[in-house]
Amino acid sequence: LENADVDAWREHRDPSSPPESQWPLVQQALQRHGYRQEELEAGSAQLSPLVFNTLHAVLPESVRLCDLPEHARLNEMEFHFSLRTCDSQDLLGLLKKHGILSERREFAFLRQLNGLMTGKIDLIYQHDHRFYICDYKSNRLPAYDAEQCRQAMCDSEYDFQALIYTLALHRWCQFRLRSAYDYEKHIGGIRYLFCRGLKADISSEEGLVAMRFDRQLIEALEMLLHPLEELA
Image (cartoon, rainbow, N blue to C red; front, side):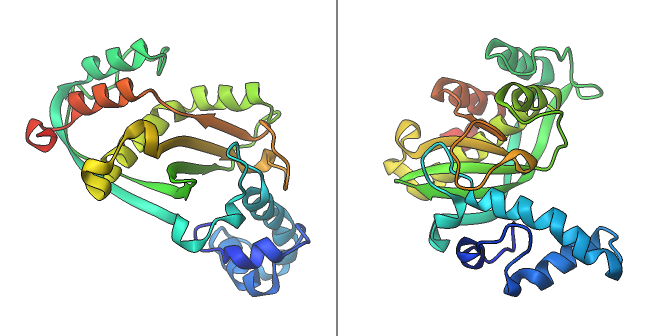
């Protein structure tokens, strides 16, 4: 999905196989994961529908990823921000107050947070003047209805991941847009796409979790984690 030619997949009509120009990309992806030459055709029949359905699924803002122009997509955005020395229990208390990591009692072996927070976001995209985060998941679930997907979010603590990603996007927008930036205006939210449960050209909660955190939580998290000189 990071390296896919989105235009080629948008015009493609057969989800069971990749566009001709994308076959080398699919083949390389399969070989990196141990597929032998004689297994590539069968592997493509498994992989191609996941890519096709992910790019063609209708998102809550009534757009498909394959419809977004290239300038509106940013793949694999890296983020790095320094951390203020912070007691991990203070962080956990803030999260629990907002219903995140409610079952966790501590961050094992981590009394204090400091140093650098780093990561990569699968996709940032812009639609109707708002920025969205997209994260792809290939989890095998018993089903992909809203309840099962949200349970997977909780079990794997993806909600905490989503919060960190949102903070990273918030900081990125502050840097890029400066005084014009407004969280309510510019941040559209985050979409977790469970690729095995998505269906092309259908707007549905199946295989998708859409989230958007309150500005108050993001600002409180920012105040807790970021060095004071960076918040000035």
